Length: 627
Image 1: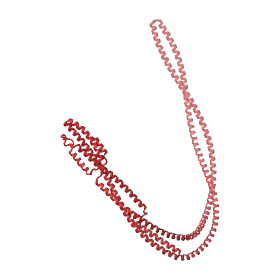
Image 2: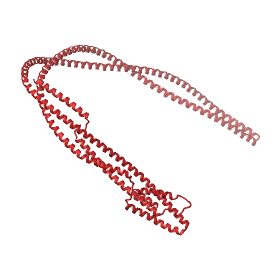
Image 3: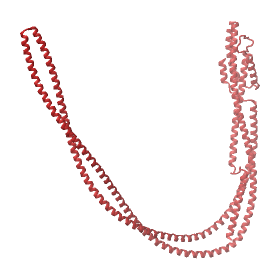
């Protein structure tokens, strides 16, 4: 049973919303269809009216353009005459301006010549001072160079002396080291001789003891005469050997002492020589330091001389650049003189040009008088033209008022359409919100149905267990037969549920409520755990199968509803997209400002009236000028 219930819960589709949501969607569809039906003839009528108005406007615009072209031709003629007059005046003014510029340039050139002459004098004075400073600096450099040569020679001599002293010091140091090494060797030899003397004394003492023992033995052996004679002989021999050895050692000791005294005297003399050498080294170092300081001073002097040389070279470069500038200024002076000559020529040419201008002005005045006479004739024609223009303007104002009225009506219609669009968008929003709510309800119902299925499976399991327990308690033979039948029952329930879920899909909606009541009653009737369990209280397997079949039918019906709602939502979305495209195309086809407010139209009317007034004023001015 558990496997069958889990498979049913996996295969069951998602539940759908209630009847109220379905009725709201049907109402929304009907309203949208009515709006579409109403929109199509209105759009056609509006398009026809708009096309007719556009044709009338184009004809009127063509007339206005014709009048504008005539007015522009008249303006061009007037402006050409005015430009010719102004060009002659401008040419005369430009000639006078050129003359003034030439005079100013002449004055500036004179000023430049004066300043250049002053600068020339200043430069000559500077060159003289620079040349004197140059000679002085050259003399200083020569004297400093001689001092440097002398100081270099002195430094070289001192360096040679320093090297000789260093060589002497190194020789004395090597000699000192050799004498110190010899003194160390003599001391070592003295120590060795002293040790040798001590060893000989020890040996003599040992031999004495041995001889004494030997004498005692001889005395013991030869108690009488032989012992005495032998002792005497031995003593004599020992004394002679010891005396000879002592004499030799004393002579060696005396020679070592004399050598030691000689070496000590040499060491003292070498130390005195070293002290003298150190004193001389210190003196030499002091002299070297003083020479180094002198060399540094000389190097600084040399650097100063080099700086002076560089300054002198810079001054020479400056003087050469100044001479070049002076030459350039002289060349500029020549160019200015040539410009002065050309300016004088231009003055003569301008004077002749002014004479010609006066003659042309006289001729123009005579022509202007003739034009006045002809303008008086053209005034009459212009008055007629003004009358015709005023009549045309009146017609244009009448046409404009009609246009404004048509625009207002068109605007009102567009506002009505916009309101309808807003209402439709609101309806679409509400329907979409309802759809979202329905989807939420569907998800809630899915969860509830899943929970109920789990509870039913648990109840079935508990009932089957209790029945099996009861049958086991009553008779073992019946329980074995019931277990086989329960397995067959499980198979039957699983096959039947699958068949019912595939075939039986149309059941009334009240089945869900009946199922809920039935499940609640079954939950109340079935005991959870009790010791006094009876077979009468356990629900029959057929009842449970019927419950499961009803639940599956309800679920199938809700799945159909959900699929229908999803298809309906898709169709609504497609229709909304189509209507949005239609509205966008309609708005794009309209002229800019057709869907604007009445305030914008009023502003346009005011601007157009101002333009007409300005045009009429210009026309009157043109007529007056021609007259």
